[in-house]
Length: 317
Length: 256
Image (cartoon, rainbow over all chains, first blue to last red; front, side, top):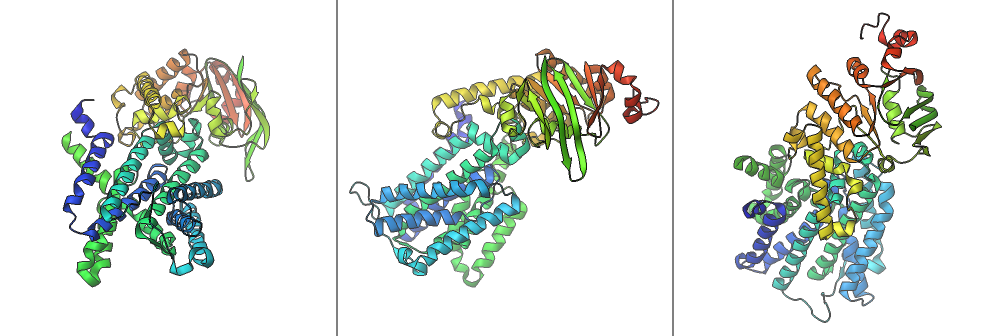
């Protein structure tokens, strides 16, 4: 492969492009409100990349992924706030705990298929959100709880620009790890599970193992993003773990494009910024939002990034 | 030497006894065919042998080892592979990637090294890709190496499944109606391919309705009827077996 061809691949061109965007974007962001939006884009994108590994690549739906985001968020809030843990340790403990929970529920829940799996994961997310709302002594209940700032070895990030670089770096790292998984034998096995479970098994792919694995990986990514999110915002409420947030996440994945790492990033970017941009339309905000969603799904059922990528590929040929 | 043996195997769906106390054996080497009318239990037998179904009674022995009730993904490691009557191609991948999935057990597939893209994972994967491309050449799909499988014609997909099954490096290959839906010239090419595969030392068991293909390619034919073994023998013996003629081939043997 020559140098020019490499630039057209997700690994080289894609990562270079994303890094360039992250590097120059601050010059175009006029104030901290815009930084705030972009940081949220990055965090949503991290969750969506994990969710896309599960939904787009392995073909398994989850309508409860905000629950894992909420678990990471509250693990960080509670462990740092009530027990004085260092934030990094709390983040790792939250990720490990969420991963263990995901592992425990994955075996029974991943036996379900299609609509039944959707219902199962929906129920799981709702249970998590109810527990977080009801355990008032621990979580502050529906009112939520304040969260202390982040710190690593005495260094405390402050200001949106510092947070911007942290989240940007995490996003790049996540994209790299996800591309590695996708382009490895593990990624092929995940796509094989999606393509035909019967054939995958016959080829020696332990289907249950890979379903559990990708469910845990996506849950851990959501948990980490949740931890970073609450330290940045400084506050956490149960709505982070709620049904509406779960639906937003899956919508981002489908809009950006199933089985596309950059699709997850683009989907997160659009659905996080669009509501902010559409506020100018006042009462028609949700109407415009819905119309855009429907239009994309009708005219680009594969999602934005795969459709555009195919258009470009066909033109080059 | 016996490579595959099933002993008094039974499997019922509701009240329908699809496989009914079936015993048969397949010796190593050569091409074997399983024929029988629709509903005789041919595909059910394949699904039992590959572990997709679990039998109610009986045993399945692969090279003398009891494999009854083993999960399907374990069977690939024991040297058993198959194709499917209704295509089970991974339509979300290229032809090459389909075959590479067949080499799953021969990859470095540990999670952390894969996620960190360690050099040995990448190196092994490049070797796997080269082997997969060779297999596509072997089955006559050299033109389709980089093709998206959902853009390939039906006949090519049939071969793709065979290449993918061969990628597991099987000792025993089960082909479920490899010529179904193919025209006579394509069927002839499948005939050649089956001989070529058998020539590499792989034992082939074929379920097929195309009698010309069956009679031409198989050294040993097993006839199933209502889940039991009706007859077995060479093509010539089967052709003149009165039970077979009555149950399947028609009174005048007009399909021969």
